[in-house]
Image (cartoon, rainbow, N blue to C red; front, top):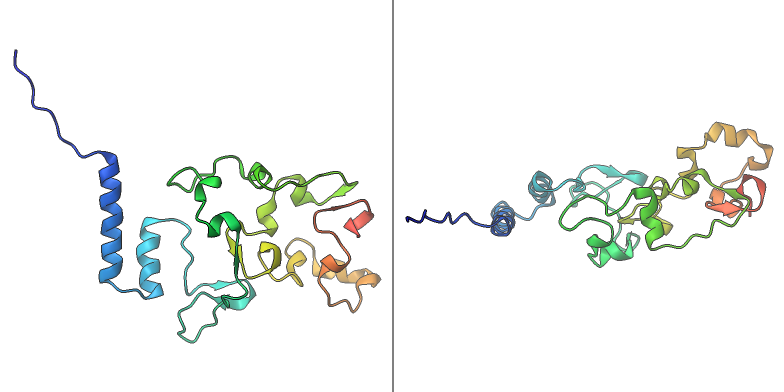
Length: 188
């Protein structure tokens, strides 16, 4: 009886480690410029923010090349993201969510839907319509400036037609609750 030689193919874990070492070395060799890091990382991963692409508010993540940058003091990261607890929302080593996005936020955040009127995105579990799950330069991890935020979905022209809004410069949330209310129009 003859034994066939055993194949010594490396395990997939070794390939993953090799791949990340290769990416690290490549990024070290080609420098630490944000643009270079972006090119290297975006080749490997999805969702890497472009350092030269404007973000909400007309700012960019640029590297001091004449473009504005979000001030560190205003940018806030979502707790689990800041703590690198990616697996709280994503499957290990992937970008795939552990559950449907409309249920994900309520896995950690409690929101009692006990009011008479509930905002549409809240009802549908569309938290990401208003909030950035990783971080934001705006309060409450909003995706844009709270003073103009509501106009992404609500027509500024239609809102201005209501005489009660004439001359108002404050954020909508001064009078309206963004999630739910017992009053019409989500009034506080």
